[in-house]
Image: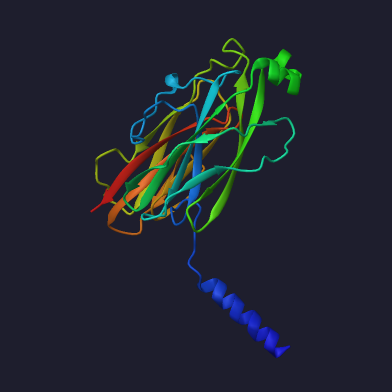
Length: 262
C-alpha cells in the first residue's frame, strides 16, 4: 500500500509540474477555422475579407474549403488527406477532394497555415435521389472528413456545409460574415501588459455565431467574447487572431493582427 501511495504521489507531482497549456495559444498544431468558398487569391489576412465575393455552394458546381491552422514557428510541413467518412444523421458524405499545397506564413511567435481542398458537388438530381427533402427544401448538408498532420501529431477534421439547389433558394443570397479587430489598432505599439481586445462583426442575417481568439503567447480572459482581456507575458512582438463561425451556415471570417509591446 505504501508503494502504491508513493507512486500516486509521484504521478500527481509530475502532472502538476507539466507546463500549463491554453486553448488560445499556438503551442502546437491547432485547426482554428474553415472558410467555405473563400475570396480567391487572398493571402493577406491582416485585412478584412470581402464577404460579397464568396458565392454559396450550388448543386452541380464545385466547392472550396479553406482550412486554417496555427502552430509554433518552425512547425513541420502540414499534410492534408481525405479521411474515412463518418456516418452522421441529416448529412451526406463527400469524398472526392483535391487538396492544394499548404500556404504557410510566419508571424511573431506563431505560424499560420492555410490549405484549400476542392471537390465537385453532386447534381440536384443526385442530391434529390439521395436526400428526398432536397427537392422541396432546396438545400442539403454535405459532410467532409479529412486528416491533417505536421509529422508529430495527427488530427481528424470533420464537419459539414450547406449546398443549395440554386441561388434562388431562401438563405442562399444572405450576406456572409465580415469582421474586424477594433483594438489593438494596426501598426501601433501597446503600452500595457493587460489589454482590452475588441472586435466588430457584420452579421446581417442575425445568425448565431461562435467566436474564437488565438494568440502567440499570453492569456485571454474569455476567448469566446467579442470584447475581452489579453494579458501579455512581457515586452516583445506578438500575434493576435480573431475568428468567427456561423453555427448554421458553417461559414466564417478571421483577421490577424501583429502587436508590439516595447
